[in-house]
Image (cartoon, rainbow over all chains, first blue to last red):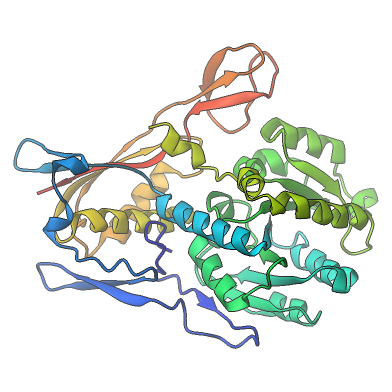
Length: 309
Length: 109
């Protein structure tokens, strides 16, 4: 994706509607540039900033550029490379807060149990929790189909070659899902402990799942992900007697990276420990009710960058 | 490989400011704690800039050191990764620098 303008790129993002039918990728207008050799390159703008890309775009010294020697001109930009994504994330955060909608960004390695946990949660909480799901996967709607079988609304976002959801994808997912005021949205991110950590979506909280079959050293191997987490769930606790996974050691490693993350151990397969997860979801209601609190819970990893300048 | 989408974002960010003008150099600052590999950005840069006014531009990446300050003993020290552990044993460490992921400037002809 284009992290700067939030445009779609050649990765081929596709977003389904509530019925699971494929919609055209990202509604927006195509935006073309043609260079002096007549070559045209195109990207899609979805936020209507179709300003002309003329030399006059560089508008004067007030903009902070100066002339360098040897006939070149240096334009000082000093902007975060993720600035556009973070701006779109802030817009999402406002959109969610304005509707009193809570959005939880669920992240993990492939196979850690994100979908199983969501299916069980949606089934067991039943009418107690008004919730929809935005499913991110590179390909297929297999997980979305599992969620849809619970009777809950689900939107599939296929990222194609993309390895993470970004704020613009969530924006389109929210548009397609159209969650009720006061409801909850679970965002199942692409299974990956690397890239999703960098992209703030504007979510209420980030939930990272690690399963006991993966090894208790995951936090130190993927520190960005665990640093970003508001809640870490150790899943598949029913397998603890059979695997070499030390829950206390895992918590110790998480604490070295993230002293503030909450921590739960459960089994989405057997239901062990799920009461604490449901309690966390209940508790998160009051946290999301105060927009400033929701913002503070999910400061993007790169949030400190602009302050440094 | 989030560096590819970040590099594509970089191209559009530059084009938003420079339009059709040929870009001769792009200056970035990428810290070791940013989650983005400078070498991977270099690898993606030629692909992401092909066919744009940035094609052939010199890519210069400033890679500042990561620095942290211990909130327990107030000591400042170098951080090579996000395992924030002060030599005194405390994990209560404030990151002072190293997370930079910035498009600093471009040079246009």
